[in-house]
Length: 180
Length: 180
Image 1: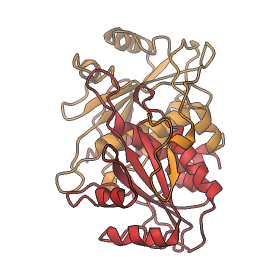
Image 2 (image 1 turned 180 degrees about the vertical axis):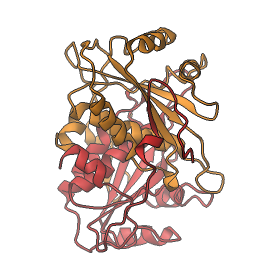
Image 3 (image 1 turned 45 degrees about the vertical axis):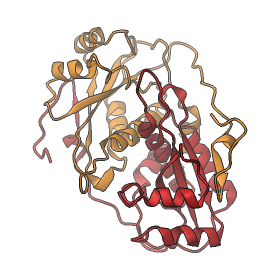
């Protein structure tokens, strides 16, 4: 799929998924796209666990309440480590966000849908920590995001966005009519 | 350009640029790609200023020491606002990182090069703040990134990355041979 088409097509899908499994070669391609994202000082702080084993996936889904990506045949879990890049600065949030964006585009290009579930996973009840412990993730990694992967079983809705002119200007800041 | 080719082709280019200007339609397409990225609770916290006016660009370049993107015919500056998305949580770093990644891919797909300059801009000497003040950016926005845009005048080098197998596993965490 053309890059710009993938960028336009991607949206946050929260509907039901078909039960058709996602082939390993597709999950590999999606995670390779994540690995290809840039990282601060090339520290490559992001890594991934794909879950396509039905019994394990059911266990993980039962951990996350309210439920998310409940009918998806696969999940990709995003892990991060806060490795210092230079001086005392760490860019691991930027690193995993760029990696997630690459994966979301790859998911769409391969005909699937997904949604970036982070706030729900990293909230005070630490669902990410519970998922990580079930998967044997060491303490120095943090599980920050769940990406369900599968084929949409329902119509894909799109969120309404501001007009581009409200977010873009040339050669200086322009106060836009609808500032938000 | 095919999405996966764009993902493979993108790299952090720190060499010299040709002086050929970047047409406005290309800068528009790049920033539209940035606007199309997802954002936490659709808060759309990221906005952009493209600078292609030669005199202004020279002024901005003189602010950033050591110099970056010094020969690029255009810069895109990334602005963010720490808008609370839900409860007390704010996802603006994730938002602008996803937007930057979309723009880096769009830049490559259009035949240009770039590099994500953030640490240098947001460091203690607050070069981002100096750039923002010169551009009339209000205090509630933060300028966090400079993306030079232009055609490479030198060979494009690629960084060495870990093998994908060191960052990816299935159905559980695997301690990899070369852990870092």
